[in-house]
Amino acid sequence: MATNNGLFISLEGIDGSGKSTQARQLAEWFRSLGRDPVLTREPGGAPGAEDIRRLLVEGDPNRWSPETEILLFTAARRDHLESTIRPALKAGRDVITDRFADSTRVYQGATRGDLRNIVDQIHATTIGVEPDLTLILDMDPAISLSRGLARGSGEDRFEEFGLPFQQALRRGFQDLAAAEPERCHLIDADADPDRVAARIRDVVQTRL
Image (cartoon, rainbow, N blue to C red):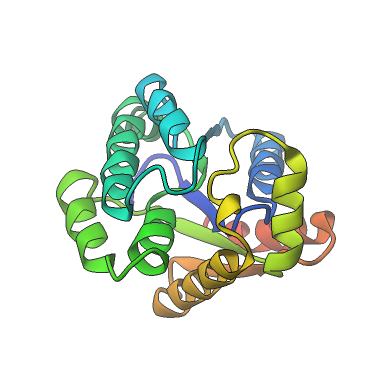
């Protein structure tokens, strides 16, 4: 999402790869530079989107079909865009989001069926923007899955699909990084969190 105002950054990756932690650290670094970032997440990031989040991340893994998930995620994303992202960028603030459209491209578009074309068509029609920079945290799925389940957050619907699903997600994100190297940067998230944060800062610094 090219803008003359704030910088729009998304963090992506499989469940338990450390996105939330790294998003918080990145926001803290921005503040240390005198910037005023908005730290947000998907699904969620706005009142209506948070309501939809509960439908998506809680409950039985087979609660929704992939097609229904695409529509729910997109509805939440539209509210997020209208209520949080666009106003912040227009005000000159940076936006750092834990997930954006790439998660739908991988989770529903590539992993739960051959639905990428549907995801892209709906995205183009209803969202129509991309982050300026996407950081994809790449981690061993077995480690990330154990982390995610250990949290016991109650928001583990996708973790419940098991290790093969997480392995397929990893391949999907790696393919995405290879297909869009200008926007997407693959970050080794198996490293110590401080080293991961340092690598993220190095990449982001080139865009400031």
